[in-house]
Length: 205
Image (cartoon, rainbow, N blue to C red; front, side, top):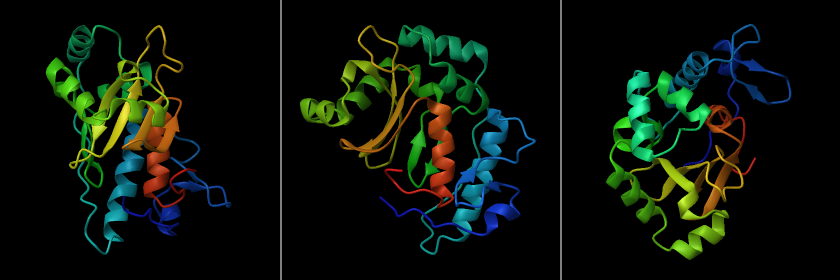
């Protein structure tokens, strides 16, 4: 896992707030906290991070155009349940994201419309099922994989709204059971990733 970039003075130059204690806030105070603004902030931070990446490992790409309501409804039909509100709103604004963080990508709706793809990724993530379930504290049946890196090690899991789910909508980013971050919903995760890529927080914060 690449090390996080440290605090950079260019955050204020981008019009991104810093409260003076080294805590990054996504977006200036007067802007609405919409997905459009969150995505714009992430893209700007990613582009600047790439310029400060001496190894050339950060390859920024813009977010994909958002999915239509019809496409999202088709995804929910295939999954057999509604998407979490926060993640659904993201897909409506950006239908997946390649190179979201290094080679970690967020899956598009095309991935979710193929039931076999979802199960294949779950089988890969939970190849040692008992070990992984114990490590991250959730069962495979509770999870929807929403992202993975090119090596199949890092993955992003969305907790489904099942009868035995302790926190539907929660997002976990982990590497073979080692949890990097656990967030209440996808918007919190996305904001955390913006701060992480800006070098404002470290893994485990």
